[in-house]
Each structure stands twice: as structure tokens, then as C-alpha cells.
Length: 218
Length: 154
Image 1 (tube, each protein chain N blue to C red):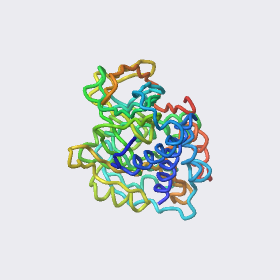
Image 2: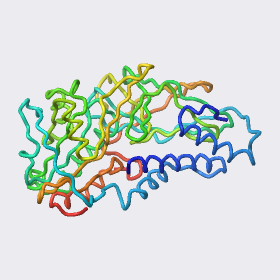
Image 3: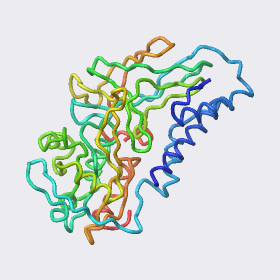
Image 4: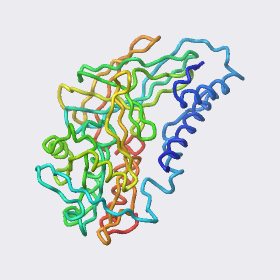
């Protein structure tokens, strides 16, 4: 729902800017992103009133081993993201932002404690090996999970994130749908309590990660 | 003016642009006059795939259309829109009269595939943009850091 509001706000802003462009004013894309941020509250990170339960996902990691999300991340600050490696824009940017921000803003002990879990929504192409080599290019500590798409979709839905298999439309053009939010789980109670939108920059993560690894509100 | 209500955004933007221009410059039928700014490619994770962003500004009184993007650095460049979490490959993008076509992270983006090699920060990638009416433009796209964001510069 919130996502739709963002899109509507951005659309309206874009339309308004087109109008202003006719009047000779400069349309500025930064205004568009500012508007969509304002409608979401104070910034790209939203603290949830009701934390989500961590999905009970059991998938295959990049070493081909079984990975039980709840068991493996119990008591660790955890960032969960659903995406795919054949994604040029948001997926690598989000993962790179987290990697660089963790390097810059966390102590080595905090970095070792943090679990960043990338769950593929494209298991057909994202084999454990493919996922492993992609994540290695971003941060070798990140965990990549692949497996049955239905389980991934159900897990994503359980935390309010919508993902669909990539399809082709009638003209043979690719269409893919995936929620681009990062969900942060607290090390204190394992609840998913912060939702971070794809507008978060590396500077936003540098500011918020030190709080998130302690289970504090960003 | 833009009369193809293919998507809501086009229709809405078109209607507003029409309303905005009818008072003052409705008789402006000058040719599309295109320029490109704000180009960058975030350093990609691998040579499999990269994204690219730019803005095309049309100072003229006639709309145009971006119909093709190609690059010597990549086997294929495709154009995509993102609306409400749905990413969709497009065969063209409208550039309104006195308006802009914006490719930015989280929205429209160019997708480079089959890269000859992994582009590194500090390098540039050469693009050729083809339009429905105007002549083609060649632009140099700088490769920035993987976390680069135009508003912060980081």
C-alpha cells in the first residue's frame, strides 16, 4: 500500500514538473525523490509498529548447504533482501550500499555479528554457484540463498514484500516484479522492525547501520 | 502534443503539458532539440550486467522518441521502466516537447548486457542514442562507484 502511495506521489510530481517545464522553470529530478521520501515519513528507513516475524525459510546457501534462516540468524542483527543477480539497478546498488556502509560505519566485531541475507527470486538462473560469485563481487560475507520459488515467494509475502517470477509479455519483452525493500531484524528479539526503501543511499546506511546492529531505532 | 494514452503517466503528463503550454506557447512547432546530461554507470558487480542513467532534455516544440541505445562496450543495451515495483522492458521512450526523459536509479534505467569486460570506476563507456526524428547522439558515460548517487555524489 505504502509503495503505491510513493508511486502515485512520484507520478504526480513528475506530471507537475512537466507542467512547470512549460512555464520555463527547471524541472529537477531531485525534487521528485524528495517528494516521494516526504510521503513516507522522515527518510528511507521506517520503524514498524508491529514487527514482522522472521520467515521460517530453509533454502540452499552458496556452498550448496542447507540454510535455516531462523536458526542461523538467531540473535544476530539481520538484513533480509529479496532480489536476483540479473538485476542491473536496485539489487546490486542496495547490496553495495550495505557492504560499503558496513565497512565504513561498523566495528569488525559488529560486521562479524551482522547477517546480510540475499534471497533470490530467480532460482532458475541463480544457482548456488552463480549467486556465490555475484555476492563475492560485493561482499564475501553476505549470505545468498536459493531454492524453490514458491517458498521464497511465501516467505517474502509473510513480511509484506511482493515478488513474482520474471515473465515475458506478448511482445517478448521481460517483465519482473519484486519489492525492493530491505527488512532489518533486531538481534534482541529477532523481529523485523525496520523497513528500508530503495531510495536509501550509502550515506543513509552509514547513519542507520550502527543503530540497527544494536537493535535500536534508526 | 502527446496523444497516446499508453500509460497513465504519459496521459497525465501529456494533459498537463498541454494545459501548461496552451496559454503561451501553443504555436511553438520548432523541431525537437535534444541534449543529454547526468550520464553515469554505477560500477557493476560483474561483466554480465550493468545499469546506466542519463537525462535527455528537449528544448524544441516537437516531441521525439528514444528508440534505441547501443554501446561498443556491450553486446546489448535495453531500456526499462520501473513502476510500482514492476520492471518492464520498453522498445521506446517518449521525450515530450519542452520536457525531459529521465533515467534514474529506482525508475527508468538502461540495462547493459554481454559486456566486453567489467567496467571499472574512472572509465567511460560510449553510447549511441537513436531517435525517431532527431539524428543520433553519441555520449560518453562515466563509470562511477557502485554506490554512487547523483544527489550525494558518493
